[in-house]
Image (cartoon, rainbow, N blue to C red):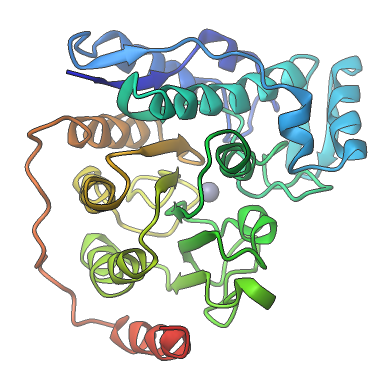
Length: 342
Ligand SMILES: [Zn+2]
């Protein structure tokens, strides 16, 4: 039986943004420890290869790639106030992108049933010509572009559940109807974008769905957002690939996020997406680590998601215990905004 592909590697420890920086090597160390405990009958560890420049330049401008490359000549380089590199960061970021592409290749070749790239630095804030928010290259956007160019993907669903809005990914596909981008995020919050009214433009109008949640949301609110918006929109879109920007900073323990999601809450979201993958994509679904800054929360949540990726994992209920809470008016507002695209 095909296994779940997992990419995680000691090389990812080498990106050092500074001693007190939350996006620190220990994040990957706990995942390396987790990987050692995984059952080899269920999980296939894949070594990452460095991404090719051409794959990165399909998403980023040449000058941006040159700038990131040039950081390898400096012990420390500040791309912005909180996006800091060391001499190894460029090489590590090539391996982060390459790790995700490795998972996508394994799924396309049907070597593995599904996959999770446990890489750093994260990517979803990186814009075409600008690093930001701990992100150098937009690994998710590069991956989606790679699927279109190399594996014939026609309709890609990108679900971004990081607590921060995935502005870089949204930007990359804002006018592109072949990518449905859906984001749940804390709002208002960094980076400031991700209002419900941001719905895409041109041919891509209606193919960006933002679910800007108030601080304090937890498993019931996320379940409601998935039940009422994410799953119906995905079913209507009928993707041939599903990619997940899995940030674990909505975790209740996270020092940066203001949400209350539990390990089981992340597993629930993963289960709903895995169900969509079974239905539409012949199981092709790849998860990519974005944020998540509490080490215990990160390890526990990643472990819970990996368990749900196994055959026979208990399916998520179609009727979760829904919150009839504070977010009901927001959900209705988003549904009304997107009504015209149905
Ligand atoms: Zn984040």
